[in-house]
Every structure is written in C-alpha cells, then in structure tokens.
Image (tube, rainbow, N blue to C red; front, side, top):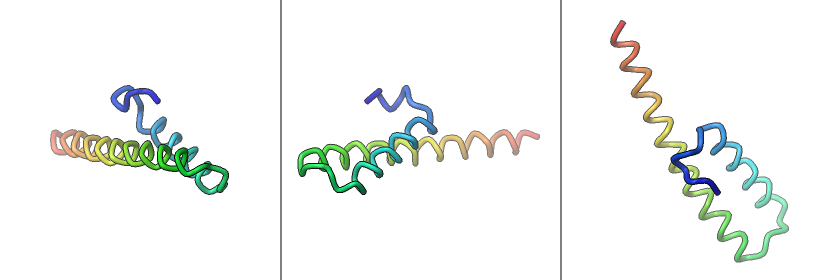
Length: 65
C-alpha cells in the first residue's frame, strides 16, 4: 500500500471498497482477514481526516467571499 499521505481520498476509498469485497467473499484466511482489517482501519482514519481538512478548507473559502 502507498503511504496514506500520497493517496487521494478517491484512491483510499477505492481501496476500502476492494477490501470490503475481499472480506465479503469469505475467502480470506484469518491472518489475511486481520491484515485487511488493519489496512481498512488505517484507510478509514485517513479518509475521515481528509474529509475534515477539505471541509475546513471549503469553509474558509466560503467565509472569504
């Protein structure tokens, strides 16, 4: 996985969707499931932070007008 700092929100979201499909397939072993859940948790945190940052930037732009 790329470092989260280098991912766009859309790339991170797409990775989350791919992980979800893997998990829903019920074809993952326990260790692989654990690694996918860890990665998903990291991606979720990244997406939340990115959305918060974007929201703040948009609010500043709107206030500036």
